[in-house]
Each structure stands twice: as C-alpha cells, then as structure tokens.
Length: 372
Image (cartoon, rainbow, N blue to C red; front, top):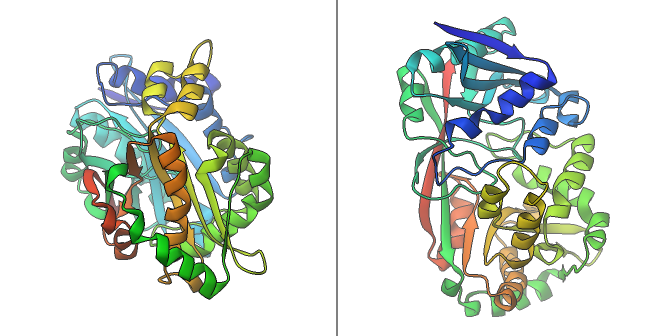
C-alpha cells in the first residue's frame, strides 16, 4: 500500500531533499545538490518566490520507507497575470513502481482541480531559472548542476498515467577547438561601430553588481516571448544575486551596452561543477567547499547558462560581440568543452547562433502535461 504524506516540518523537508541520495546512490551520472541550498529553496521565509507562488511537498511511503517525492507548485503570476491555468510540479522522483508515481501525480492533480486549474505540467520548477524536463536521452553522461537527472524508466511512467508531451528540449556541447574566431572577429567590430556598442569586462564580483538588476530586467524582456516564461520580480532579483552571482567567475559574465550605457545584451557562463558536487555529496563542509572552489578556478569545462539580447537588437549579430569576449578568456584558461543548458527544440533563433561551432546534442528532455 502506498501512503502519501505532506512534508511540512524541517525534518520532513530534509527527508524530501535527501531521498534522491538514496535513489541514485549507485549512479555514476547523478549530481547531488547542496542539501542546505536545496532546503533554502523550499523555505518560505528565505525564497521570495513564495510571495507570488505556493508549493507543497509530498513524500510517498511503502512499507514505512520513502519511495518517491513531488513538489506541487502554483505560480500565481502565471495563473492570474498571464491567465495560464497551470498546475506545476517538479522535484519528481520515484522508484520503478507505477503505483508510487500514480499516487504522487494524483496528489498534484487533485490540488490543481481544487484551484480550478486546467492542466498539470512537469517536471518544472517555480520559474525559468529553475530546472526543467524529464530526461529521455543521455543517461550515460553526467548531468550538469543546473538540470535534473533521472533513470530511463521515468518517461514511461508519465505516458502510462495519461500524460502527453508538451515541450521538448535539447542539450548540446562542443569542443572549444571547434571555435574559429574568424567567424565573429570581423563581424563584431562592424556591429560595435554600427550600433555604437561596448563590451564590459569584469575582474571582481563587486564590479558586476551595479548592472545585476539591469541584467534581470533585460532577462524579462528578452525571454518574454517564450511559452514557458514567467517574469522575475524585484524580490527574486535580490535573491538570485545573492545566491548565484558569487558562484560565477566575474570574467565569465559579459555585458554589452549602448552609447548611453544601457544594457542591451548579457551572457553568463559558469564553470562545470558537476564532478565537484559529486565529491561534495551534498555538503559544503568539511571538504565540499574546497572541491567547488577548485572547480571554479580550474575547471576546463564551462556551461553557457544564460544569454539575453534586447528585442530591438535581436537578429543584428550582437552574439558575435559576446563570443569574441569569451574567446580570449577561454583561450587563456585552456577551456576544453563548452556545454549549453536545455533549450527548446523549436527555438530556431537560439540554435542558429551556435551552428558554426558544430554542436553535438548529447541529452534530450521533455515536459509533459495532462488535462485536469
């Protein structure tokens, strides 16, 4: 018999966070989160997303043992402001038992019906800066820290329970040796002169901070057309600044401004922390932090986390300016492989900007939906 229990106490939430450590203990490819940071993500007093969203966390038990988990999420900005009546769910993990996954999905579906929502979609997080999608290809490669890993049986559970594919994503990589600077060197000089643009370089995190709010404003503008987009609020900007910016090497943050010093493009690249997080195994202390710090300084792999261009400058070649800035940094640091985060399969514009680098798709993932 499957029993579903809502995780409400700190002890329950910790059990929710730690369940995948048991589920994936024998996996070479799963990357554990930092337990403390994951718990803060679910803390209503610390994560400002709860000003505009609500979430409930559920654990599935069988024979008094945890066998699954799911987060039921309603983003009220999405529901009320965008009129998208979606029941979100994420952090969905389970043993290969259809009764377990069914009980968890029925729990989130019932919540959606009580709130008169039209459909459930997952796995997704609170917003576009969270992880997304159930993996359907690429099970034999390590997951980046910014995506979920799952076993191959997951997708079959969704389909068995009446879910249909909603969105499809791909993740790709390319060796830095594929990058031919001639493809953007001359173009970026022409573009900077034509539009009176300037690229900003940073060597210290504090130099980035005066532009951070502008970056999130531009993020909202440049990603607004995507079907899955929910805007980042002012409170969330402050939260993400404190949570993420210090993780990023300042030289991996690139801004492009116009003649009035207005931000018109940005890019954030992160060192690949996957192996370091595996060594940390969920804890920063006593040695986890040293593994992460070493990866920050010495990793030869990088992840293109975010790229945004103001709508007025899209399709004008501004990406050439960004690539030129990264080329010199990557060459100096001896970067070997560049990874990209999940991108919508039908986002032709983003795929075109990478085509010259010969990217190889190495993972695919999907979100699925079901009418309520």
